[in-house]
Amino acid sequence: MSIDAGYETRPVGGDRRGFLRELGLGGIALASLLADQTASGAAADSSEPLAPAKPHFAPKAKNVIFLFMVGGASQLETFDHKPLLKKYAGKLAREIFSKEDLEGLNPEKTYTHTRIVPPAFSFKRYGQSGAWVSKIFPHLTQVVDDIAFINSMHTDSAIHSTAQILMHTGYSRQGHPSLGSWVTYGLGTENRNMPGFVVMTDGRPSGGRALHDAGFLPGIHQATLADVKLGNPPVPHITAPAFLSRDQQGKQLDLVRKLNQLHRDMHRTQPELDARIAAFETAFRMQMEAPELFDIRTEPDSVKALYGDTEFGRKCLTARRMVEGGVRFVEILDGAQGRRWDAHGNRGGLINNHRTNAARTDQGITALIMDLKSRGLLDETLVVWATEFGRTPMEESRKEESLGRGHHHFGFSMWMAGGGVKPGITHGATDELGMHAVKGRVSHHDLHATILHLLGLDHERLTFRHNSRDFRLTDVYGNVVHELIA
Image 1 (cartoon, rainbow, N blue to C red):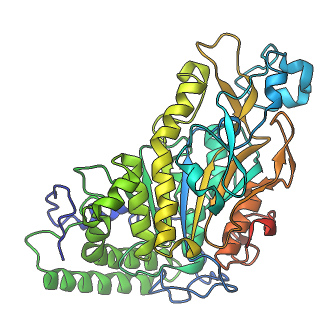
Image 2 (image 1 turned 45 degrees about the vertical axis):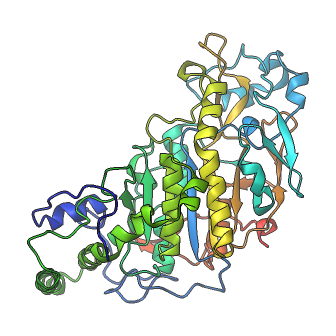
Image 3 (image 1 turned 90 degrees about the horizontal axis):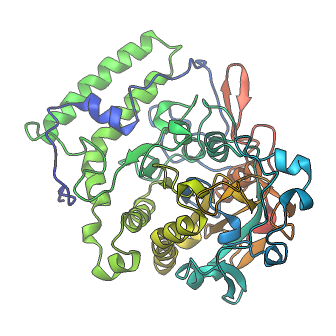
């Protein structure tokens, strides 16, 4: 097996600690955990915390690919067709919306003198389902009959960092496990040579590491960050040091394992030591399989052309290879560096922002759905396209350099495909001007409950005892949206 994955290898000098630190699998400071902690749905074998675990009931999906557009994609320029905005274009927002509506948005902006703005792009119906899609997604129109659009999302904050954390952890403050961590905690992973949770990002999002952190769960459930830029190793130190044979590495690992186990046996109230031991094991095994999984050069030219020669397209192709290789949860954070979907007037303007971002991602997303479907993987792989919130029906300020929309969490859009989702539907609706989700409302808690349900997990039973309380992803909220399930 070749370990040359199309990048230059770096000398590692036997720096296993550096490898683990970069992986995010070990060397992290965990919260103090109870020695007798138990959970429903988690793998029972502490020596193999990522071993496959039985779900609560028969799942429809086995894996998740979570596509997160950082910055707040506008529902009015993507998937929520609101032609009536043209009729009211130019009218003052305060003449149409209540004071409570306008003051409940971004506290950094005032909408007193702003005016209603019509959609920046035209919409058409596509597919047998007749789904409305903006013209900035020409590729996606080919797969609308595989998608369930949700036009009634709502969340609790219009602040980037808080909303991003809410959409990933269910809580507005840091310190709680992310969705991917909960999934691997409940189900483990099918490939013991790979981590269960992999994140590809182009920068640090406003919400920081909280978006992919394990919080108070064992550290082995924290995401592994992978960089698939050309010329770089996907994970630092992923290749074995040249001066150590595989046998020597194995003996070294055996010794470290025995020393760690001795230390653990003397400190029974520190169960995070099991996560440390498992992290060393996973890191060692990754050197056998990860380089090959990340090596997209082995794909046929036709497949590479389908995804496109772009960084985002390569991430989508890598995501398909990850789930095909048994990784449970893969996330792509798009536009994390600089919140690229943040369509303010002083950040380049709404029109250029969304036209550019859609063009950059449209082909890769569409190819991902097509490729999964052609391989028979879409039925068992849940693909989610999400963002932290939407954009306002009115401009954000009369003094901006160009047209922009403000932050908006009362009603916005996202979609899901595959993994047991009902295809070719549009669920829920906002009001006629796109201000409030009014029909089939779906909160971030409902979204999380539904994703877990598709994976065979009951969101009320998947718990972890921390600080004398049983915590769960959905806190004390959340309802499964059965209308979305086939």
